[in-house]
Picture 1 (cartoon, rainbow, N blue to C red):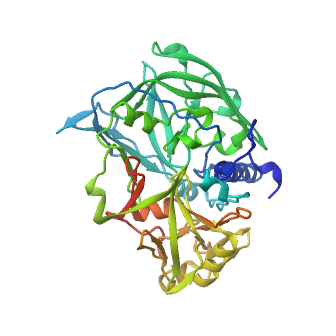
Picture 2: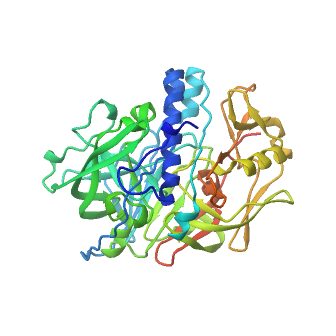
Picture 3: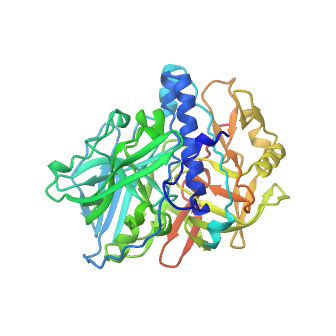
Length: 468
């Protein structure tokens, strides 16, 4: 991939803690370039894979507030938002589900673009070195959205809740045309706003994402973080067309302080330190590919969203949510999987070293997609006879069926199905696998910040991602 696809840090040596971020931004930029060429409704595809770079600094906050318990649930499509209602200490807030891309494709007769992701660098250095439930809305299995608000007047934004980054940013009312029609934060209308004074600036090969830091009340469900520092973006040109026409406004990072830009304390860490959540845990339920919405719980877990026992895996590093990948099987055949895997809600598919993904693809009978040779596809009719793919984490095998790891590209019988694995290359570092939303739809994912571990259990009512 050309060098100008990769984001650059403005100062200091680019540590490999930031290499995943570079790849995510590079992938997003490449998708934007493709969309700009294709144009039309196909450009509506947006892959949720944004992450940012930055210095490392941990800010201690000793403010306190009573713990909260909240649940956000989906309302019927024809319903209107209702005021929150408490039920035995649990807050439920109704939200709407967006139109899916499949409906848009069907209406306009276009197919989604294939996903792509490539990374460069040396990962080895990176690894040396109350309860709130948020409804997540699935955008054709590529993005999961939830709502937050900022300011005394509760300005609402649609956000991607991303375990692969650690900052919060929204478009500013001062943003140029690069922010398109997104909701924009107007600090002048909020009586709780306070100026921070620092610039927020990240340079990508394709252009900058920049703005400035501000402080205001951040509301996530019924949890309020007073005087929380976040970024107002005034120039989002580095994200390209994909952001301009995308359905999300900003990012709420759920990663560790070590990967936060400007050393800003991640919002969930702040919630834990201020005593605003019951437990230092959050959990993702991504619903199903056939229409069921997902849910993010902050401060606990929801037993309704999983079945069986929870299996906990200790973290291998406190940068991304990283665990050791002990083995990988295709049917009964072993693949040399390498050392580490990142559980990443900001990545829609799965990723791994290119040579190993190629081997995986060949074992399941996939072939290169003629529209994009970097993608692998399969004949949808062959899915029932394809082998399972299993990941060993913490001594337990987590299995994906072919219905789990393939995705429909459209409703036309002439279109193939996407093999939902993408190659990534990390120079001389150990092989890295990314367990994205394809994996997280199958397994309820618990991010235990307090005990530095990830819990996995079979998601309840999980449905296949591909109709066969």
